[in-house]
Length: 146
Image (cartoon, rainbow, N blue to C red; front, side, top):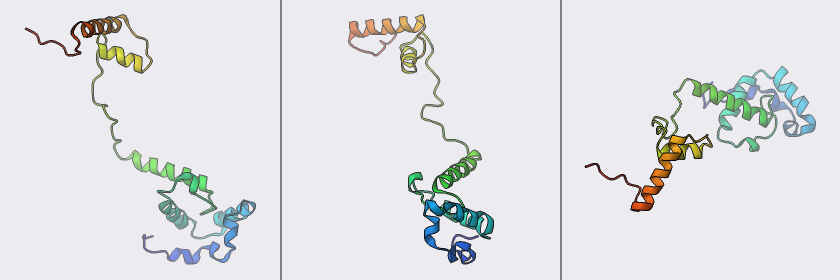
């Protein structure tokens, strides 16, 4: 099916049915049955609706289309997107390639606190030393070696 060709819609069984059937919860069972068991163009319909709803919020998908409710179409769309992404390399989160600060540094102490990890004595000592130096010099910069 090409994106511009919608000839399949002329063969859809729903064209000859009451449109309200697809949007009333009282008749959803009948609508689903027509889509799933009778309609010859269900696959084309599903492909078209997923493309149309690709940028639609999950909570704004209404009615029965291609035999699926809005929530089912949202889930189907998410699964299809995940399958497409499986073949592509995943983008790295910021800082993913950066090595962790080794224990025994103020940075490692801060990381332990941020991640609520147990803090080892070497990191506690490094933090205390950094705080003493800051109080003494008023700076966090490390003095140049002579």
